[in-house]
Structure formats: structure tokens, C-alpha cells
Length: 147
Image 1 (cartoon, rainbow, N blue to C red):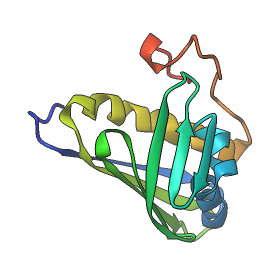
Image 2: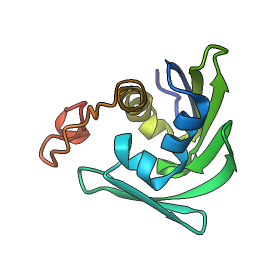
Image 3: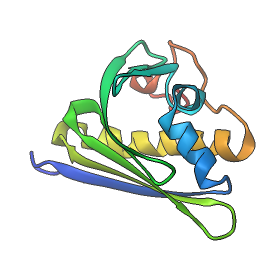
């Protein structure tokens, strides 16, 4: 599913039985992000300092915070990630993730990587379980999906 050098879009949806307000808190706060996404993800003055299990770091810019419906930030390779949080009408949440301007050389990793991130989010939000292994010797680069 390569893009021949063009910038691409990735879109995934996941249903969570957790309320939109709680899902938004997991996405938009340092405490929430550290429960499923990164070892730490402190935020100051519109910048998130992600630190991942494998030692990788990323400074992300927060473009938009519209509680509890929308959270937008920059990501690897200069892409732009939008989380749209919507009520399912039954107390749960339909979450749509859209990553735009994905560099072609990062497309396949990002496509699969977001599945991992969204499923760890589901584990925390719906079941209170951290699915990550937190082992710096067993990371994505070594072929492990449970980073």
C-alpha cells in the first residue's frame, strides 16, 4: 500500500465503551497519554515531549484542543494527527484517528503502529489494562507489537 513518494492519509476507527470525556482525557493529558501511548508525554506551552519505551523522543505541537470532541497534534515526519471523539449514543465513544501528510517512507510503519496505539488505548479505557511490555529490548524495531 505504498504511495510512490506522495504524502498519504491514514484513517482508523475504534469503538470504546468508555465515555467521550474519559477518552478525551486519555488523549489530551500527560497522565492519560502515559497510560497507553508513551512512557511519558509531558506538555508545556502547546508542546508535548513524548518519550517512548525504546528511548525514542518526539516533540509534538498541539494544534487544537476542543474538549471532548477533537485533539490535533503533529507527529513523526511532520504529519498531522486528528482524533475525533464522538458519542455512540449509548455512553460509549466512536473514535476516529486521521493522520495526514504521512511521508511515504513512514506509511507502512504508521499504518500498523496506529493499530497498536489504538488497541492499547482500548485496553486502558475499557478494561483498565496496560497492554504494553515496557521492555526497551522488545520494541517495534525488534518486531514486537506490544511496546
